[in-house]
Amino acid sequence: LSVRLNGQTSDWQEVQKHYKRATEAERAGQNDIAAQEFREVLRLDPHRAEAHANLGVIAYTGKDYSRAAEQFRAALKLRPTLWNAEALLGMSELRLGHPQPAKAHIEESFRRLQDAKLQSEAGMDLIALDYRNHELPRALEILQILEHANPNDPSLLYTEYRTYTELAARTLVTLSRVAPESAQIHRILAQTAQSQDDFPGSIAQYRK
Image (cartoon, rainbow, N blue to C red; front, top):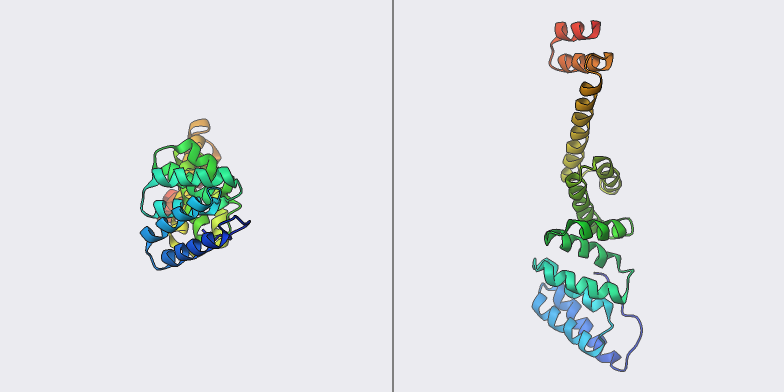
């Protein structure tokens, strides 16, 4: 998480020192040292929301989703507008098998995320939840936001293709149920035959 230290405590210089060590360790990939330094920050200043959030990121990176969720909750209790932490809390909840709170947290934060990579990951989780709940039109809304930010992402384009295909299939099933001999059904059959170079079959369907 990109953070700034706000406010001062009686141990302000010590807090700054440990925070600097923690962020340097994170950049170097030394997450154990970083976590130790962030815990020291919290020992000196228990109300430092950013330290909780960064401990959550370290736990999430290590796939310890239960501990990550605990740290993100602590961060949000101190500062409810840490949107990265809220998104990551939802993503942690999803991996813990709690889809309802996961959806609530990701939806609350998704449009407020400034980090493109995190927004993409959160958005893909939200799409997975929409699939699970059979809410494909909502999934399309998320896809359109993500596509605007990164129009050439192959994974995103594939998911968009799958979603449109699934929506088309569901619509066709509904149409064939409510109007099986309608002109619209025969037009669809004609277009399908034409796409397969079955021109006599296509002509027959258009005539119908």
